[in-house]
Length: 165
Image 1 (tube, rainbow, N blue to C red):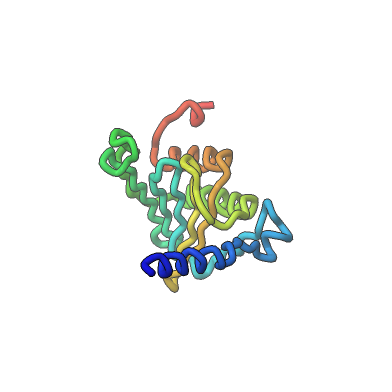
Image 2: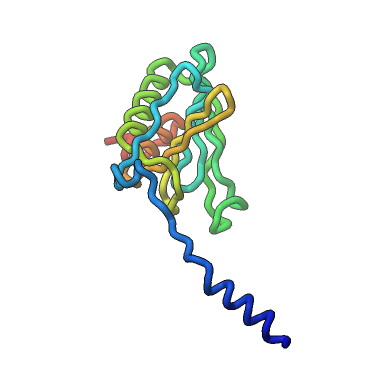
């Protein structure tokens, strides 16, 4: 008698259909490159790039501000417990620097076109934060992460071999 309850539970578990993950029409039509939504320029509150180590680079696109903020990972936040992203930076961008950031961000946004579904270690993420407190995120291919890293280093004032070539 004690077995009938567990036997019934086992039978019910066996009778349940397996979970099947369905692909969206977009994934079926473009399995390797779903479309990224267009950036709604007039409604952008902030552009953010998070590098492969989780360091955060953000720009406020308001013309009177153009505030660049770099928030590095501290050792206590890193997976190794030792990595540091360096010193935080907060400064005004020049119009030229803003133009380079915006052009790079938008070009990569359009060419990447890969809405975030997950992220592997070392991949960067682009995020557009809108004035209505919504946001849109895209995961970057590693080659594009490297390109955005170079721009981030330049805006932080970090000199690397890539900056000197």
